[in-house]
Image (tube, rainbow, N blue to C red):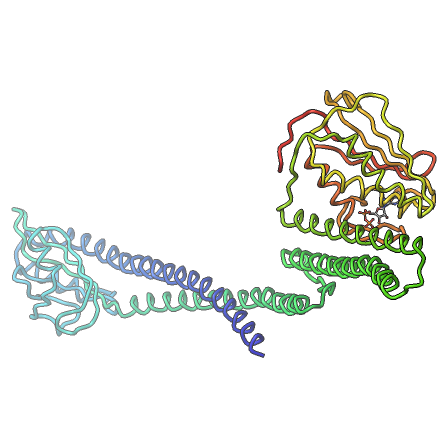
Amino acid sequence: MRKRKFRLLRVRGLRNRWMLSSMLIILLLVLLGLSAYGVAIGGYYYSGVRTALRSKASSSSAFFSNYVTRTYAEYYQSAYRYTSLFDERDRLDLQFISSSGRIEVSTYGLTAGTQPGTEDIAKALETGEAATFLGRDPSTGERIAAVSSPLVYGDGRIMGVIRYVTSLRLVDRQVLVSILIAVGIGLGLLLIVFLTNLVFIRSIVTPIGEVTAMTRHIADGGYGSQIENRYEDEMGEMVDAINDLSIQISQSEKVKTEFISSVSHELRTPLTAITGWTETLSYDESLDAETRQKGLAIVLEEARRLTNMVEELLVFTRIEDGRFTVNIEKLDIEAELEDTIFTCRELMRQEGISLEYTPPEEEIPVIPGDPERLKQVILNILDNAAKHGGSGKRIVVTLSLQKNYQDSGRDFVCIRVRDFGPGIPPDELGNVKLKFYRGSSKARGSGIGLAVCDEIVRLHNGLLDIDNAADGGCVVSVRLPAGQLIVNS
Ligand code: ADP
């Protein structure tokens, strides 16, 4: 239950993390876009108002400068007429302002005589250039846009300004509406991204949940279980990989169980013989000398077989964990082989198998090799020939020197063991050197013998070849390099 809670928390975490990171970026972008849009739209509207007022003001001031050159009364009259006829009064306030900053004539009569006090007036009076103001009217507090353009005497003196004022209420509203629309679009965008993210994350999180549950089932011992692959993307590849892993674990579990059972069986057979014969020899005093001798020989042989088997297992575990090495010395391989054959011949004869050995015609050189390990290889191959090819009742061993073997420029000493049994089925030939591989042969075995032999021969820089003879039976060749330095690896 606790495990399950932990899993859910993790899944939720993934969803949150994804949402947070992607939404944060989009939110930032939307905010950035909105600010840029706000600045642009504000600039566009306000500068539009300013430009329109400015062009109006400059053309009016050019027109009135003519009157200014005449009498003040004439100017005042014209200004009064001009303002009274001004037809844009509902949108604009037109003002004539004296050099002291006071309104003399205005379309909005109530303001006459007052002093607006905005910076555009002072600036226009001071510089003789048109000036603008955008902000709050000091007297009303309303947001306004104003442009003041100077009225200049013929001699260049400034007599006052002509000023257009408009309320920014409508423009402000326009700007606000535009920004609100943009914010709405931004929020809509965020919502769309949120929803698509939600769908996308669900399409990842749900399969991950399923795959995790199944993987946990496999980890809990459901080896070989398969996850239904409904995905064609990276998730599909992951499911395939987990399915493969599950099958491989199940196969190696099967191999392990078979191995343990075959090894136990292998150990039990000699142990039964040893126990049986020792009991007989200890308690049955009526046994004649010959039977006693035979019993002791069997006990010895079975004990030897057990020793070999344990030795093979030890070597195998050392190979597996990379601790296996060979102790190379100068080795008289011919003497070693003859010795081993001598040991085995009698035992095989008792099983009805004839072990034939013809000494080599050429002189066999001393080779670099590990006597113990190479003896183990020969014994193993002879044991295989006896147990798997025993029905042929004949094993032939030869030793030869192969100079410049296959034009390799190297000389090899070759030990060849041939039996006359059924041989190895062609489709099994490629696998017999694999660890735990036991072919279709019905004979006892753990399936590690040839794997161990192969590793020992490899550490001698030699070659182990297994094949079927043309006229039946199996041929195993061990080729060991003659007279060359071997490096342990
Ligand atoms: P095992 O302990 O089973 O003998 P090995 O690794 O020595 O394991 O051999 C692997 C398999 O190769 C054997 O199970 C058998 O099927 C096949 N094999 C080996 N030697 C012979 C042979 N001389 N004749 C027929 N089959 C053989």
